[in-house]
Length: 92
Image 1 (tube, rainbow, N blue to C red):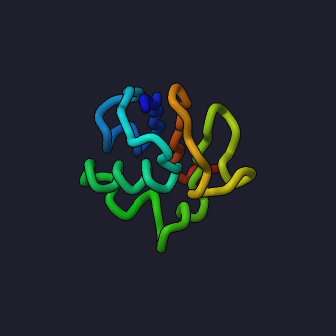
Image 2 (image 1 turned 180 degrees about the vertical axis):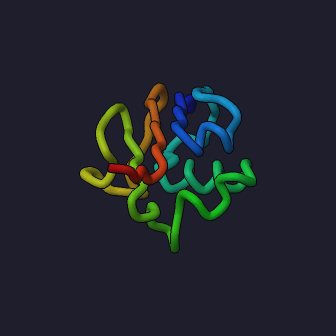
Image 3 (image 1 turned 90 degrees about the horizontal axis):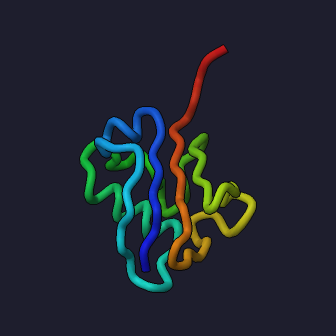
C-alpha cells in the first residue's frame, strides 16, 4: 500500500524533506511505519517509539486525526492514508 508521510520541524530535518510517498505491506499499523522510519533514518532512531508505544509528547496524525484517539501504534493504515509526524513542541 502507498502512504503519504509528512514530517515537521526537527523530524523534517532528519528526513531531509517535508513529504514523501512510501510503500508498506498491506495491514501495516502506525507502529510498523514508525519503526521502519526509525530504522531508515539515523536522525529518527529512538525518537518515535518507546517500548512499542508512541513516545510521550509526540503527535502522530492519521488523515488529520490524532492516533491517540484511535488505537495508538496499533492503528490500522490503508492505501492512500496520510500519516503526519510532529515532534514535541516547547515554547511560551
